[in-house]
Length: 352
Ligand code: NAD
Ligand code: DAU
Image (cartoon, rainbow, N blue to C red; front, side, top):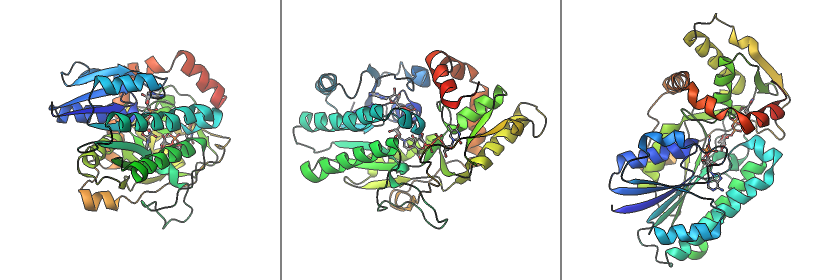
């Protein structure tokens, strides 16, 4: 084993794809997956690699100082890829404090523990913080894109907590010369996406012929990237990115919510053998998200030009793979859409 790497949040949506990317492509690394298994963490996401000899799962909370210190003593980590977070904007509006605890305090706890464990000898070490494009705020003009130097302007409790964590990561670099890298990615989609987020929620509701809740007029725009392309970008940046730098990651693939929901309806109608237009009738416009960001759009040319990354699938291919995955994995969704989660969902959307 020539590197021991800690990946946090590896039982979540993106983290599980990152764990798989590293465990399967780098048999010489030992990957330790630290995850608290919150409502969003699911070991079923990584069941295929659970017994690989270069993989270990550790259940624990990144806000637990003693636990994280012990983990750094147990494993002499060479690197950290930090994804653990509270990630859903609507939940951050309902309960901001959970976001401050995990996203801000949890991140600072990891930074501090790594700094102490590495005893300020940072040769060969790196701490990679996975962040979001939401820290930049919202865009109004169609010719505007987020670049790495765009001023931070977070507008939801979630994005404020992620922006705060980014600031701490940069502060550790500036103050202690701590070896950090940050990436800010646009909206991901793909297999194992938790069904509270737009695309899997719509797929699941279309399947169950339930209302499709579109916030406001559905005019908001998101820039969608296939999750495996995000995992590939994280691999490239972890290995070849320059310490202290930030890289934007995005698919150059903007969709208005309502157009995307209609595309999912027609794709699902075709795949399920339903009559054309049947699922569109389920579209239900509901109250807008408080402080709803209008448009996100990423300029990823730094990553593409300097590190040679580009998406491997078109949106058409990625969406077809995603819908096919859900169609063959209803068990996965059934296991998580019950009990407490279901109660939360019904309260939140006031629809049954
Ligand atoms: P997710 O909610 O699916 O997964 C988060 C994981 O973190 C879960 O497995 C959960 O159990 C774990 N976790 C939460 N709190 C923890 C704690 N206190 N200690 C240890 N583990 C904890 O999230 P995701 O969508 O996979 O996002 C992963 C990361 O990528 C986040 O940092 C998010 O901000 C960032 N990001 C997400 C997107 C997106 O579109 N989903 C886009 C850009 C960046
Ligand atoms: O941009 C990156 C971010 O993308 C990540 O940092 C977040 O972790 C991730 O959750 C995602 O945030 P969004 O708020 O953009 O994703 P969400 O899937 O919640 O919503 C996408 C759009 O769809 C948004 O404009 C709100 C809208 N929406 C969402 C839901 C859940 C609806 O209209 N109806 C819904 O039911």
